[in-house]
Image (cartoon, rainbow, N blue to C red; front, side, top):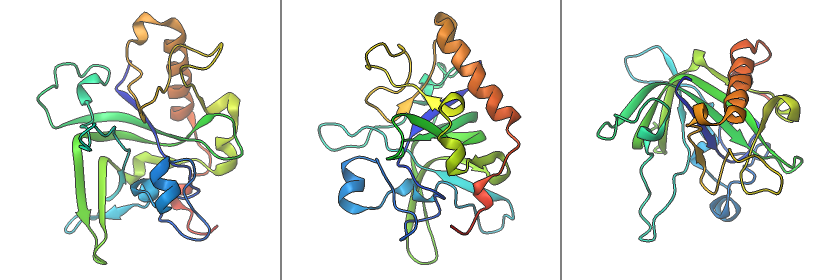
Length: 215
């Protein structure tokens, strides 16, 4: 099974900044209080100075310890990366972004980065307007897809499981915003689910809202 990482973030339409038409939903206490999240720019492709390649910078919130210290993202738990405990990043990861809309009763895939680099610790970039964007994943924009809102609601296609629900699967998101989806060789149901999602991603040829700029 390839390297894969599921990330639970707030629900937005375009992820190109917070505005009157696109406010984050279901992102936890911080979102309710501040109406702002770093993942608001997860599909706002940028270029770096001296490089014409466009990139998407992805943010997912890791757990915060009792001392209010933000935990690192344990990249060694990604499938096939157990020997990377001392590394600061891992390449060639399929990062699947997931969120829940107010009109749905399940978490769904909202988009993905193929061939992404995932960092153990948060990175940061300051834009010309002074805004500092944090991120812990990065991928070339041509490897990124943001699903149209209507497609995300198709449960049979883009449903993402959560553990702890009555009669629910034993795999999926727990309390954390990150699901490593490892040990698939030990669980045939998890293996089948991952194969299905990966196949749908590889075969997707529909509209990509990464390039959508109007609401």
